[in-house]
Image (cartoon, rainbow, N blue to C red):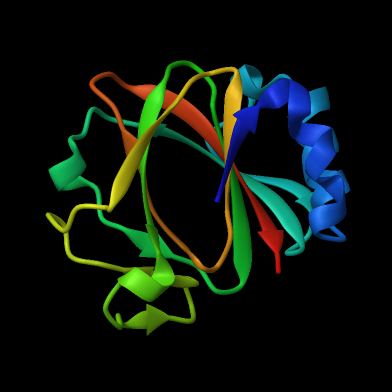
Length: 148
């Protein structure tokens, strides 16, 4: 897992062959103006999911893991809290290949929680269990999905 300021995002381009496309999109797009839903960047290799999350507590947000995609998550209209638990500290879970997700039961808390401000981003790799979008207010955010 990576947590950093958007001004440092280019430092991570070399981590994946598709990161440059994702980073260009994040830094050169008016994220607040994006429509909700899937926004195309480079087919299934890189795309953005834009969503508005309603207020939720830590107890209401499931931990999730993805195998095929890396998440670059950026809050757009507000700050949020994101949970983190390394995959080797989670029990085996049922994986949905169609949705590329293992979801753990609601109420299972993450090991750690971090504050992510609008000027920041997180990167979650397949080994990173994460519980995003804990927030007391509605927040618009973008999740850029990058194929592993």
